[in-house]
Structures are given as C-alpha cells and as structure tokens.
Amino acid sequence: MPKPERAPLTGIKRRLARAPIWLYEHRMGWVMTGHFILLNHVGRRSGLPRQAVVEVCRHDGRTGSYVICSGWGERSQWFQNLMANPNITIQVRDQRIPVTSHRLSTEQGGDEMVKYAHRHPHAAKRLSRFMGFEPDGSDGHYRHIGRNLPFVRLDPTRELGSSGAAKR
Image (cartoon, rainbow, N blue to C red):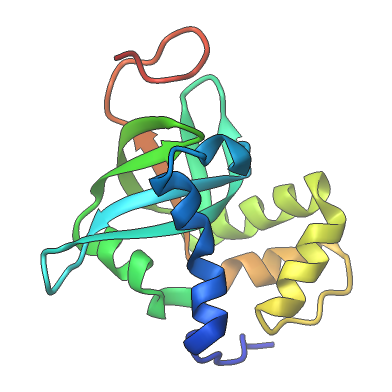
C-alpha cells in the first residue's frame, strides 16, 4: 500500500502548525516537554535560517540522540534542508544542542515506527491516519508505514554530561 500524496499545509493550517515556534522564540520551550524539539537549520537554496518544530519519535538518553520522522515525506522543507546541510542546532525545552543529521535506512525507519507504536499506540494510530495511512495496529503494518517515511537521527556533536544533555 503506497503512501498517499499530501499537499503541504497552507494558510491558517500552516500558521497553527508553526505556532509552537513562537513558544521557543519566547523562552517557553519548556512547555513543549521532551515530546517536541525545535530544529534550527539553513535553507538549502536561500542559505537563510529556518525553523521547524517536530515530534520526537525516540530519545536515547545514553547517547543524547533523537530520532524524528518527516510525516510529509521527502517533500518536507525541513527534511530537504537537513539532507543538504546536516549540521544544525536543536532546542530541547530551553537548551540548545548542536547535532549532525543522519537519514535512517528504510529498514531502520520501519523498526522505529514499530517501537513508536509500542510506546504510543493511540498516537501512532492517529498520526498514521493523519499522514494518509489506515493502520490495522499490527507490527507488520507499522513497519510498512515506517519504511515509507523518512526517519532522521540527530546525534549531538559535543560531549554529553551524565544527564544526557550537552555540556556547555
């Protein structure tokens, strides 16, 4: 079952989707807990600073890595920008962390989606539907969905402290 094509958000829907950026800009990133992070990246054509808030699929407290997914597929602007310029800064709550972006293989993406569905079954089902899939709740189906979406691992580029946060 191929992923249905979805048009990017426009108008009021786009503004609402980008509203969490305002929280980070006004030092209220703590409101986003650890479920969402702010990507500070560079436009691949313009070279200008860009921002996007994305959901965290998984955080590895030992390595400090974050795994994120582009629900809009490879057409997502932030995804294309990270593939062109992988060294970015993320903001987790109110902390900025320099990271390097690495695209995961389709198999790794399938595994990440299954793990996410196990940790957050209701959210996985809702998000899958939002992205145009009709999940049946099985690991096999979530693996299929994950293979059709680009997953990215963000690895810190500085030494981490014992809490998993980058040392300043």
